[in-house]
Structure formats: structure tokens, C-alpha cells
Image: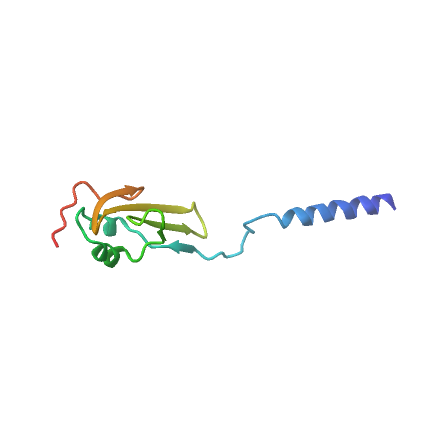
Length: 117
């Protein structure tokens, strides 16, 4: 009888620990995208002096617009693929009045950018 209890307890613990796995083998998980899709080509088209409408046409509406910093737009993109490491891209744009003044983040325009509009 005690052996049966030990076996039941062992199997219960094993099954319970299987519930804590975030990735089960052979189970498909969709790629999850959140935020604004940001590509290097899109960011390369940004130029200081562009107005807000031009930036919004190029990148879309910002994900975050702070009430405390109305001249700052934040664009965030995350991708959690089925396999592989997650991708995180962040772009912060600073305006002065209606003009783009500064670009920060892990995606910035290429220094050799020579787009002619």
C-alpha cells in the first residue's frame, strides 16, 4: 500500500511539473507581432526637419504619446517567433514644434542615407 501512494505521488508531481513548461514539443505556436512594424528602410527615410504628418505617413501613428512629453513619439515593435529569440525594436522621435529634431533607439537612420524625395 505505501508503494502505491509513493507511485501516485511521484506521477502527480511529474504531471504537475509538465504544466509549467511554456513550450510543449511538437505543438505549433503562432508568431506574435505587437506594435508598429519598423524596418530599417522606413527609418532611413526619416530626416530632421520633417513635419509630424510626414512622419506619421511614413511610420504610422505612434504606439505611445505621453501627455507629459507631447513633443516625443515612441514607436515600439516586438516579434515573438515560433522558434528563435524575440525581436524588439524601439524608436523615439523628438519634435520641436512641428519639426522632427532628434531620433533615438535601436533603429536609427543610416549615416550614408541619400534618399531623394
